[in-house]
Amino acid sequence: GEASEIHAFKASVSELEPLALDLSDLADRAPPHRRRQDLINFRRAVVRDLYEELRDLASQVQTEQMQEMRHENEVASFFTAAPSSSSRAALAPGRKPPPLLAGSSAQG
Image (cartoon, rainbow, N blue to C red; front, side, top):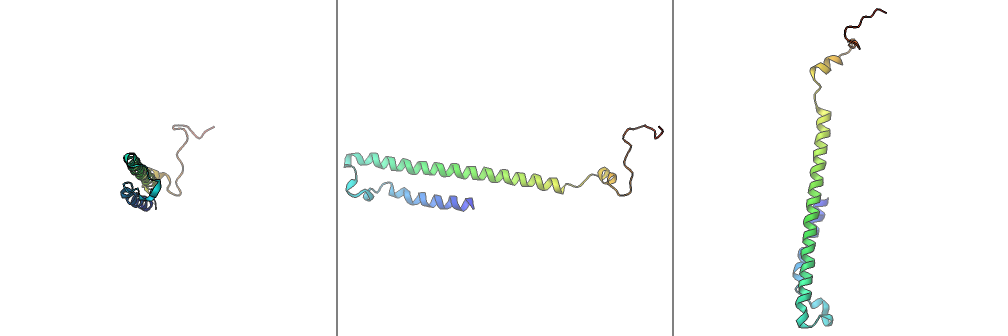
């Protein structure tokens, strides 16, 4: 589910981390030596931002899972709550319903 996707994303970001320092992928397009540190800093910032996004995403998933579990527990407790003895007595078969108005007479 979502947790396995987050772990896979984390593994991908972990693979990118050491590549931030390796500029060989640019070959002859690499910046001059004096500008390379800027590029390395930029790449490190991108990796750091990916980790922050990952942390935010994991937190959001955890919050949603907790809300879903709480909702499921509320629904389950609603349907499994035992009726009180007075409600069981009121629902007993063959029993007359209580009068609508207390003290009213059947005379008319």
